Image: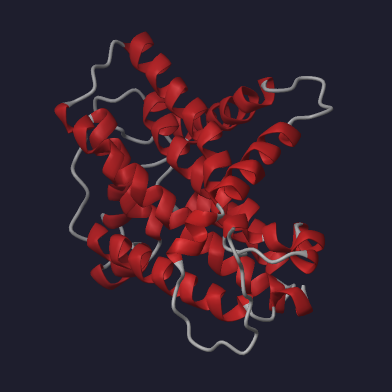
Length: 275
């Protein structure tokens, strides 16, 4: 029989990955519950999964494709935009859901013990539904425009993992910070809205790099999703490979993810008391 001992006086910030694995069933239940309730009692149901990205794509086409006439090379603009939107939609969904996840589950957090990290981690699975829809739309547009994926597609899983880690890193940070400072509930929507335009979703990153000095380019690539979206387009559309500045984005992702896990572990001790 499995015996669990919770020691409130236990010190240290060591991550217990074995314990996380033991709660894999709770992880799956939380993800399944979120999937079921997401569009429950809505008239259109899962159709919303298609409406949201298509509406955003239409706005991007009108603003960046027609009004500003962004140069996307030999790639049709709708295909260019939807490839960036697929990655950004996943990131923004996980960030928004994970940021408020502990507060939303406060009743469960107060009553029983389990590794609280399971809650924000489960959001990464739910976000894969939206991401799959985005990829489906990419494939549809590829077929419409007769666009063949390049050999770079073999590296696609690598950038998908980077997108997941990036989303979880910022989401875990926000979930832990929101517990102590409720102000971050208002920061997350701002980050999602601001990030949409500060990330090369509707325009190529070269448009920014060609008009900024080197020091500003370094600041631009502090955004972890800049390198990820460049990688997505390189693997899906065969455009220019990620610039050397992307190493900054990838380094930020790793630093944010590791630091978020340890900060979350630190806050986890008092989570049930202050939530």
